[in-house]
Length: 399
Image 1 (cartoon, one colour):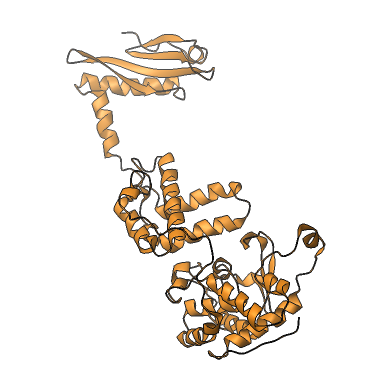
Image 2: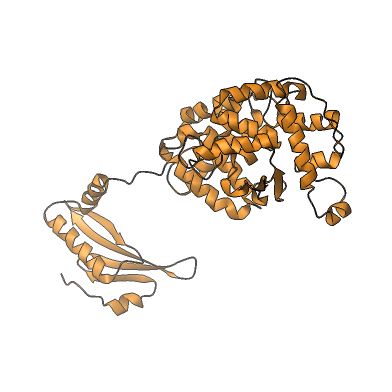
């Protein structure tokens, strides 16, 4: 039985066909769809009177490597061992690397989608939704997440906050689809809605696109008094949010690098604003007092740190200090109603405090300033009202 019939040059120049190297080893060359050539090494042998064959590698396998593998297989056949079965047993004993966790998959997916998003606000929303509500999945290997695990995360928010629940489910589904695409898990997606969770979960309350449930502004001072007594991270954060009339994402994501303590101004970068435009917030004395307390804690870059090291407070923790029937976003409406009913500040000043664009396209094109000084007076008046302890104070301030 003659061995080593081929040369490396013959292998490199081989056209479609079969090329025997002797001893049962042969190279098979076929045309590929992309115009290149497919190459496959095959070892054919007979064991206990039955013909068999096994693959020894494809295009990247050299002639020398194929001969080495064939020599091992021949020795096994001589000893009555089936090389195919021996290889299967060997692969079965090799420990498989653990699959990445849900948290790592989520981070990888968000990073891959950044090029699709107009600004970092979307990145922040995805990260915050998953970190706040899917924390129970965070350290779980992605291939072990099943329907029960997904339901454990969804049920607490399913009826309470319908829009958040919808986004959360969709984002969990996207993370698990991403994991399946990378072959880190298999089977159906346990977060899929149609034909799966739709048969398990009750129908959500219809999503309301109108006004967010707001606390009457007359009740805000008494509520602020309760928050001041509590002195927890969520209560400090909510006080700051109310005093600055900011959105929850803006307050929770506030970093010290955005705060100018000397100028008493909080500059929120465009990437974190809903409208994608930089927004300056004048800080009242009450807001500054909260920042001074936070500076004493100073555990990370975020002004309001959460329990996880290096992370901000979660929106879930913030909602725990909000009364039933009231939304966090609704405090912006409380502020706006107070501006219109209790002060003489011009409408556009109140709208600018909320980072709302006012006026037509021409007016906006020629407006260069952001009325920071006038808004500073407005926020001080609002802080004074919030500190009134439940007593309604008429603040008729000239614009």
